[in-house]
Image 1 (cartoon, rainbow, N blue to C red):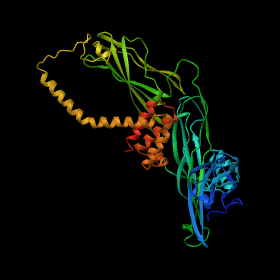
Image 2: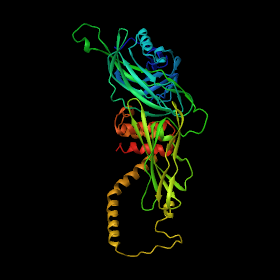
Image 3: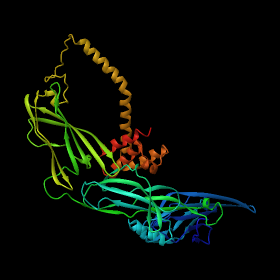
Length: 516
């Protein structure tokens, strides 16, 4: 037997239908078992959802059926069991529940009152205080502590939050049950593979300390922002007290749920002053400009550092440019370390000089705000080089290179280069044949991602159905340290950060390519 339970049984005299709860008082991190037992004609209809106050159902109900034949009378009984968790300290209510039989009879099961006790252990992120509270209330010494590397930050500044599991009991297994919601932050999960469990002493109590999650968070707006708790489910073994040789292998397993106290970060707006493009500690790097065959001048630019560079605009010219510019956005590279995340965003600038000859590119600049150094203008120096004026078709790529301004078709003049041209065409055809399957696959992925992502309000439901069809557990996938796990976490981060539809579809395509 697990432990003594106080069972409250509500039975109507008109029937044997029952509504039962396994306790009438519980802590905020306890689980309440609700049992609905139906007899006779009521067993043919599954009961509707149970009305709850200050409680929520977790998981799916279990069902057992009993059929007996006594003295020529057939007796049927179905028992449904639900698991529920408190939402907050205070009074709670289960029911009333109305059940209807197949022959039209109705039975109302009276409500059951439950009291949720305030849990001091779940209101602190001080490990010593939490441990004292658990021991004082005779609960298993297993708990979670959340710590942030700073409690005050600017909008866009990187905050690193670490969740640590402390365990002083015999845990059979555990799993993440609820990851913190992060609607007010852009988040990136850090690499904790190098973290190893260690033993720490609190007085005379030894505990195993293990980091289970670390996130880099970038606030999206100012104000007091809350990081909701992380929750785990664990199976704890209580060893038998007998002194037999097998006592250490015997005992009962109990389900335990724990969550940390929420964290509040005071997020300040960037101080008043000139406009700022991005917040963080960054460096702007510009490659040497180059021009080939009279085309545009090409400059590769990157912005790197501890910042959410996904939101950064491309650098701007800090001076007059004698020409025009087109910007091609490149990839964002994320390096997830143990204690911080760094990002690099790339752009390709295509500059079309208005004239040939000596040409000066003015400085490129990004306006940054560093929490330690204040406002900064990151610059790449001006560069002077000899250029050929870009052709008109280069300035306007939408025009066909073979078209004439007047609309006439270009004439074909065979010459010594004809054979070379035919060879190039044949090579292009072969290359097209080789890459056509890849193009088709990429097109199918885009199409599939678009179907799942639209309409946006149905995306999460479609994603759940997709993972369930492939028998993938979402909690396990969230912890999976693979490219597939990275893609799933990146997609969830994008959904919680209110990204554009194009960005969400891009991340969804990255996940789909690992779900074949």
